[in-house]
Structure formats: structure tokens, C-alpha cells
Figure 1 (cartoon, helix red, strand yellow):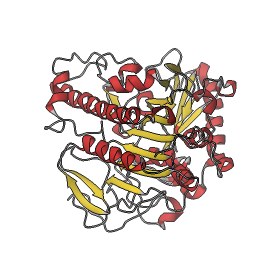
Figure 2 (cartoon, one colour; figure 1 turned 45 degrees about the vertical axis):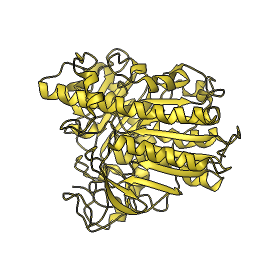
Figure 3 (cartoon, rainbow, N blue to C red; figure 1 turned 90 degrees about the horizontal axis):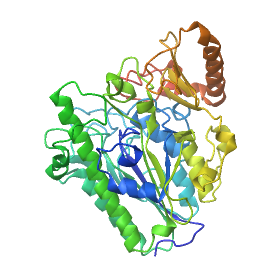
Figure 4 (tube, rainbow, N blue to C red; figure 1 turned 60 degrees about the vertical axis):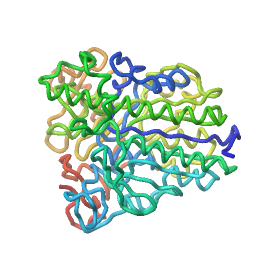
Length: 464
């Protein structure tokens, strides 16, 4: 049956889509109903300062999988057409070329598979050539594109394009459970990625079961900034309902592990690809919800929980700054596997934090973010955002202004801080950027990526 070897735990990686760091009850939102995410937090460690590598889905997902920043893997915006080719069943997503954006790049699942893990994926892929199983996944049930209706969702099963008539959050879970059941007959450990499309839009027009929508019928929605109109309230109702529906399905996964006696030898990880604003800063959306694109805390931070009873401390919270580019080295370190490209990639393992040890070397750590020509450096005290080449730039005193309301970029007394943070930012990116894929040269607008970036694009348009 599935591994019970302590040195080779099973791994259940649950990834949500467009979930703000504030959007869980265990993160302080008393209106959201998330008993199973709270249950994971009670049996593990929650990170309150976990940053995505880019505040939009495809580049953020590529970084989680490869450990490379966007200017190393070349995915700088969401992949606009789902990369399905001309026979795509969604009418507005027709494009002739099919691109495997991460071709030739090692994902952590490749390393896991090479050391005995069986790897399965159920849910959102959104990294190109969706019909082709990639990165050593032997089981491949994926979304054709990035986001769509929750009923009649465009999916791929066994290489065939289909539409799932049932509620897709339930189906993604069913497929994950089927894969884990299959693994009971295998002595090898398994890795299962369950990538929900929730809570990504659409939220209205009967996209979510009435059972979950009714839970928020009389909700005052005081957990977000005041909403301007009833339509936004209706959208937030759907957003919350989609999270609660996902939470119920996460409960099904955890229940299965407990029933099969595998919970204590399974590392469960929950996080999201990027954050989300719902009224924060007057925005509904993520990084590409504004012009110019934004790096607000709600956009660049994501919920993150790691749970492994008996190994990871229970009911712990850390405010250490960690990033999506730290994820791959941490996971490989946790299961005692090599990280071959570690010297050329920016991420550092935070395994010690998972085990409840202090990491003084992270006390003064900074994290970095990018979205095309927009780059960010974030310390405990300060955040600096630089938009190449002409700005506008931003500087925030995070300790005294956590809501990022006062931009101090022109404050005379802060010019030394501006200069110091700009110098750190540029030094770090020069160290890690692949000049052939440098995002500062890419005209990212948030409308989507349609081709290879940098020199690999051979002069063809890479973005809408």
C-alpha cells in the first residue's frame, strides 16, 4: 500500500486559485466558514508572510514547480489561451500554436519521481500544452485553460477534451481520491497535486451550489473594506461560497488519509498561486487588476499551511518571510532529496521552520517579486516597488502603515532608504535573472501571454 516509510512520506499538495491571505478563518476572518483549513492549521504550521513570486497565476505556478523566478522560466503573465490549439472547445480561446512553456526545466516532481514517488495531478495546470502530461506526472486530469464556469468546466481526461457537467470542485476532489485509492496497491510513496480552480471567478450566475451560497445570505461582510454596491456584495458571496465548497472537499481528502491510516505519514501542504484583493485598496482582483499592475500585500501574499502530525509542530504560526521560490528547495530538503540546481536558483530551504526550529538567518531576510517590468523588494519594515523604466515607484513603511496608504517615495527623509532598497533589488535580480528571459523588457499588461518571451520568442509577440 502507499508508503508508511517516515523518510519517504506521501505528499498531498493542495493549491487554490486567487485566494487572498486574509481569506481563511484561521487567518483572522471570522465570517468565512473554513473548518477544514482551520483543522489543518491546528495540526500544523501557518505562515502569515508567505509571498508568491508574481501576483498572477501562471508565473506564480511555474515558480512553485521549478524554483525559478519568472525571469528564469519565462512565464511572465497568465497564459491567455490555455495553449490548447485551434480545436479548443472554448470559442474565445482559439490559437494555432501549442507551447510547452517549461520544456527542459526541472520540476520538483521530476526529482520526486526519480527517487520513487508516484506523481498525480488533478485540477488546474495552466502552464502550456495542457493535453500533454509533463513534469513526471503519471496521472493527468487537468483544466484546459485557466478559469471557466464551475459547471460544464473544460477539462482533459486521458488526453481527451471534455466538459464536466458536475461542480468542478467536487470532480477535482473525486479524481484526487481515485488516484490515492489506486496508490493503496503500490508500495511507493505518492505525490498528489490537487489544484482547485476555486475561488477564481466566476462567482455569480449559479456557478456555485445553493447550499454554500445560502451560508452567506445574511453575512454583513465586515471582513473586507466596505463594498460599493450590491453587485460586489453578490460577487463576494460567491467568492466566499467557493472557498467554503473547496474547504469541504479538502475535508474529504483529509478524512480519506485518516481512514486509511496514512495521515501521520503524509505531508499536507495548502497554499494559493497568488493573492487577491476584494475591496482592499479599492480593487477587486490581483496584480493585473490595476494599471499599472500592483504589488499590494493582498496581491503578493498567499495563505500557506504545512501539516504533518508527529513531525511538524501543531497549531503554530510564524511571521518569517518566505517565498514561492523557497518552496522547491524546502520540499526537497524535507524529504531528504538533492536540489541539483540550487546554486543557480534563489530559493533557500526553510525546513528548520517547519520542524519548529528557529532560523536566525531569516530574521533579516527580504523577499522579491516581479510582474514583467514591475519589481518589488519586501523587508520586515519596508516595501519598495520599482516600475521600469519610468515609474511610478512606491515606498511603504510596513510597520507603521501595513495598509500601504502613504507612499513615501518622494519623502525627503526617506531617500537613503529608497536608494538602499533599490540597490538591493537590482543586485539580487542581476544575480538571478536569465538575460534571455528578463521581464523588465517585456510589455506585460495583464491581458495574457501568447508566446515565448525573450530571445526564445524570435521576435514574435509574447503578450496581448
